[in-house]
Image (cartoon, rainbow, N blue to C red; front, side, top):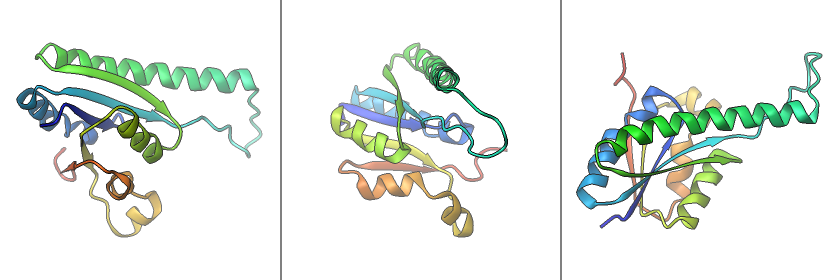
Length: 151
């Protein structure tokens, strides 16, 4: 039913709580699983007296993207060892926009992601990537409520 499943991650243990569900569905559906993480463009601080030249900014961005790719590769290798067909991608730009664009361009048929379950002021201050994707997506989304699952 789902040929391509996307699991967006943010590097946290909470986000990884979606992976067992993604693995299980990918195995049952014989689907490809796309592990995705977004690295937003590095912006040098405006205040604080520290000045970054363009080369330094590019190096910082490159290092962030390389570390992110290493993280995804480790997760992908673990899943491949269990027979899952996995792709990884590091995206740049705004998180929700990048993920929605990826869904469209790569014919993703299901998104599986953990939500931190924030509410009230925390949600208002930090925003909700899951909510933005929920409203913009044209494909089904399986949200895993991750709050309280880690100790």
